[in-house]
Length: 377
Image 1 (cartoon, rainbow, N blue to C red):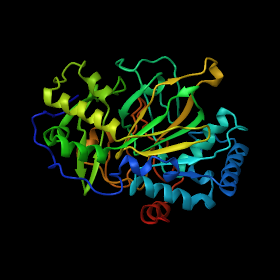
Image 2: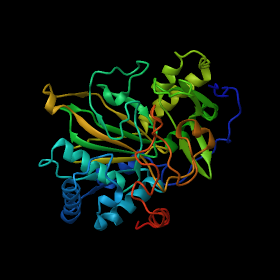
Image 3: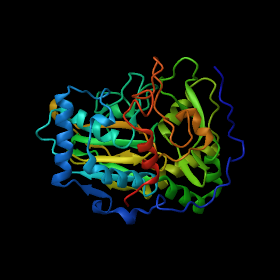
Image 4: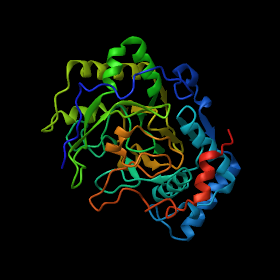
């Protein structure tokens, strides 16, 4: 195993400059949920339920079902608009109105898997080979060396995940709280540029992140990557204060210097100041572009009954229309060019994606090409 070559004193890979575009949005633009939510109409719901019934009749399961086995042709304009909002627009969207009351939890998982396949391909989320995960309190403690936040209670700090697009379906909400918080990483970047450009420059240099005990043979228990990077005219960001703090406990990781600590503190503060809050309801599905959005969770009070506890389903997706990423992000995402499957956690078996390639996932070459070039926005 080779230790990553990353020194905090190295010069920035790109001179920080102001980021412009729809993904550098201000919170006042989206205080009202109606500005970024789409409520499914009767015809769209029926298309989804018909596709679900067809999958059930074929006895398909999440992990097995391909895109071409969950056919919703009437919803393709909606999903293209959604993909455009994620990749070329503000970077997040909310779908409302899925009728979950008549569905079992397994039905919800199959439906959610089918929806995710309309945008991309699921990737593995943990050492347990989780292609579809439950976000639920099972007692893990944030800050433990191998803990994962989605299996813990309480509030979560702003962070990104190891995928192009994060999708969350609310199956059951908390008794109180547990709201989603969203912020544009480009807006945080610009705020730092105005307030403390020397701290922003530090965030263009590598930081060490813990792999949370999920490394496989040939990988170090940590990786190095800048928090901000610009490539092909676009800003991308990778951030988790928890993973950075946990890396400080690992042998071979240099200590954070005072400037790095100040930069992380300023980043977290500005993320909170420029964020919006979204209350997720049963039947909501939330989507984020992980390269342009940080997300967090407020504290919550859960139900005491096990069957009523707050439960979200989570997909990590690699997408055919994802923008190219800065080369340093290969440490986490693997292949970074446009359109290649990337992201996810490599399982001990070597598996990283739900399927071997796009075609195996039910995506035809012509379809992927159209997806990258067409939009109904």
